[in-house]
Amino acid sequence: MFLADALARHAAARPSDLALTVAGEQLTWSGLASRVHRSAHVLLGLGAGADAPVVSLLGNGRELVETQLAALTIGAVYVPLLPASVGREIEHVVRDSGARILICEADRAADLHEAFPDLSLVIVGEPDGAVRAVSGPGVVAYAAATEAAGDHDPGVRPDPQAVATIRYTSGTTGTPKGCLTTHDRLAWAAAVYLSQ
Image: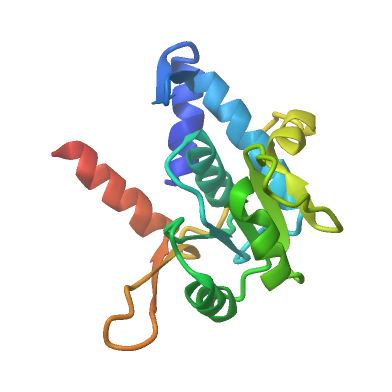
């Protein structure tokens, strides 16, 4: 079982039921599945796929849920970082994980693009006037890209034993270490949590 399969089951069994409420915005199960599929197609277009790490610097929001489920759907390795992470922390995680895609909020996009010009950059949110415009190959505005992407299931299923997420330790006794979780372990943990 995969977490993405649970999303598909809910979308099929109760499509119009409420799935997610974030900052006053509500999504039904079918709406969430559609947005996750669009997000998955955006990530696939940037080269994400089986075992490819995707680093996320997003705060709580709809896009965080969408991109995490999208990465899990296509077998990419989701690597979440706190939005307040600083340059050396981000650099260590990007280098250690081998990530080629970075997802960030618009207000950090210019600095991150300058620091990591070789990474594909997915920019969430609209920049304010103080933020320099960021463009170039591999730079994607999330809202526009997901709007243009297909909302059909990408039809990719990862190996249950493959790594699903890498979460880095705080690094209090040295550099942060990556803690790996496979797809089947992630699904098992979710099932145990829901059974409580």
